[in-house]
Length: 270
Image 1 (cartoon, rainbow, N blue to C red):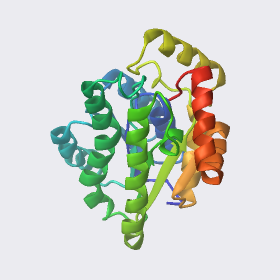
Image 2 (cartoon, one colour; image 1 turned 30 degrees about the vertical axis):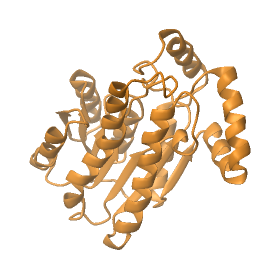
Image 3 (cartoon, rainbow, N blue to C red; image 1 turned 180 degrees about the vertical axis):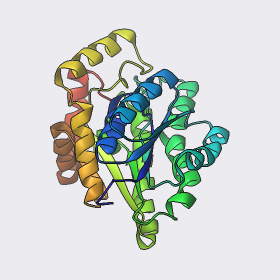
Image 4 (tube, rainbow, N blue to C red; image 1 turned 120 degrees about the vertical axis):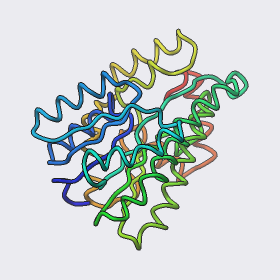
């Protein structure tokens, strides 16, 4: 998808963070937006900003883990916009702590949003993307879709799953002319840490560290859209993610030992 002008993009988790930044960046490039989020007020504010840029925006309140609700989404988007050109599966959450500390309820919650949310978006919108020349799917994985990190077992599991699904879809949809880009960000200044299920003290420390050191979501959004325009299957964002990707491919076992040592010293990262 080299040109976003007059395209219609569906963005999940659009009320904040990377989803918000991507929605506004797409509007500046001439796209119309269908904004999906559980936060209606936040999505409505993003819609107002998009309309101020001269583009159309619709708000759809939904939990991506809710299969019945996601099945309704295509008809709503088509009623508002008439077509679907781009799907961005961005909504995500995090759970901190060791695997033994995490409850089955925590696992149900994170798998429902991080993995099933992506599956639902792809499954229900793909028939409509097939009708649009040069359509594209963007799935947000993570730096931890590249490496298993202590204290982030469930988050890693979901993001590895998104990576595997994306690579398979890229192969399956290639002949249909539908592009797929899997995104692996490192630390991005979003709300995912503040909303994570984890020890409150650890969450406060991580949030403060992200506020100081993490990349702005607007910069991440620009890198993602450049990757989409170039038809790239994989994009790794942030220096720490690129270094991790390189180390994991160069020395798989040694890189895991190194990351374990970093985890013990700094605490979990999401």
